Image (cartoon, rainbow, N blue to C red; front, side, top):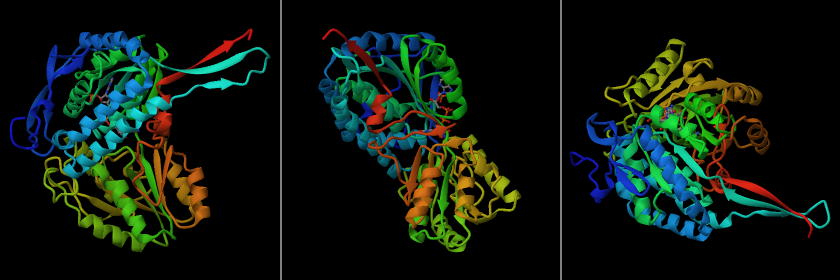
Length: 485
Ligand code: NAP
């Protein structure tokens, strides 16, 4: 780093080279420039590997696979556990890197490190809990087994909004299962991923078991999707890119996990506890400056609680401040790039032009900052209700009956998360049963944990991350029929 902002205690963690086959390598193509979303200054250059580098990484992972899969689950778990301990020991530095390259507040960056590390801890233990089955045979003299086996070489492609957590959700279960891996972070946030890789090396991950490549995503993606050696492809990012990668992977029939875009609804019913509803809206909307795939993008409020909710919510939104993520007084940091700010401005202007009213916040003040903003009386067909805003803009839409709210919530091609605030158990049961999403938060906006299965339905993707379901994504069950017994 070129200055004192986000200065690391351990300078070794600022890594700008890629890691392939246990070696740190230089790039072949034009380096990636990493900038600070608050100062807009380019503060690091990271190597960019081309096709040859990506292929070398696949070969390294393939060569390392038999020995890694052959280790006992306890041995693999012990290495993951050491990696977990190193992440914990370097929490502050990892958080500094996250704030520096992503822009989020330092408090949220620390929270991300803790959340990310839950996956390392969880799967270090889960490695030893993978078990097969002995199935009662329908024919005498036979034994039927379902034996778990790692899929082989796995690929992880991750986005910029949670540069550490999106990686550990894939790396930890993959390595615990016995797969080896090639990972590629987003070009906007490669430094956190490379620091994580350095800690993996220190933890004793054998050469080739985990490889990290950075560079042109089209070039690297082409190699990784086309390779017949890659048997598992796990992607987190936007729906259009996920669809394209799924098309490319289909030619070699890879198993896929796709964690894609969301457009989460939050339903606030008349009988909701007001404080809980406001707290849920604050967390579900403004966490990570609204740049979260499970951010409440559409806030539906039943007419009977509308006025009380809007006035309490507006007070909270008005009290928030946006600014430098390293300044502890700020609640939200800058957005990731200028396109993100433009999108928030566009969604706000669109809603205002359709009759919405601004109760807090307003136009972006410049740079990559967007003000926490609350709009009331947003029509149901406004852009902010149809596309992910991915910024700190909350739009409130009113509804009448429970069925009307449910209908509005499900009126989207996406199906990642949904939230509801309500007191009546029958309504809670009915609505959570009929929401077409992979996850539902009831009276809370904070649902993510390594202990539960995270994932979407419809255009939000397929597969689960976290919990025992997460490791299944990297396993196949071989059926063995033993006759003549
Ligand atoms: P993105 O543009 O789809 O990029 C995601 C990753 O894919 C990046 O590493 C990107 O690399 C890479 N990529 C892009 N084109 C590629 C290609 N042709 N081949 C291979 N890799 C390619 O998404 P984003 O803007 O970074 O992330 C925001 C989106 O992610 C939102 O829609 C959000 O909802 C979603 N998301 C979903 C979840 C979930 O769990 N469902 C979690 C977090 C985020 P480069 O950056 O180098 O181009």
